[in-house]
Image (cartoon, rainbow, N blue to C red):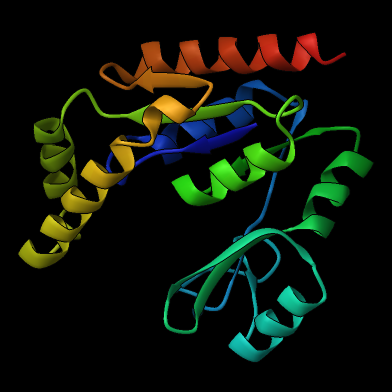
Length: 185
């Protein structure tokens, strides 16, 4: 199960509710080259690697998908992380960006469910991002512009979920995922 969304769509909250409701899912921990933020722990929040180590892992074909977001700022999904979750008898839940989601879909076209979560409008997305209080005017505009670009990819996903009411969206998301996991058994 692969979930993606523009910033401010409510993805993180929805994923937390989905994980709490679906014990058959195992959360896939992403790898990155950025420094840990305050309180983040290696192999719990992310797998943190130096850029040279990440590049070596790319050469060794260790990633299901990866991308360089900014110069020497890499993010990716480790094949070993998928295997760790499968070894637990669970279905991986991958929470990543649009491009990574489409890459995984291309590798598992029949065994993958991709879900694109979006706010009901760009205006609502802007309001949510502003309400967070974490954005500068410049970063807010950058996130809104990126969201507009990402929305163009929504039709390429298996399901589009409009998060206009959090409880309703969570219920719908849980239903979609439970039906997919159940169909795979």
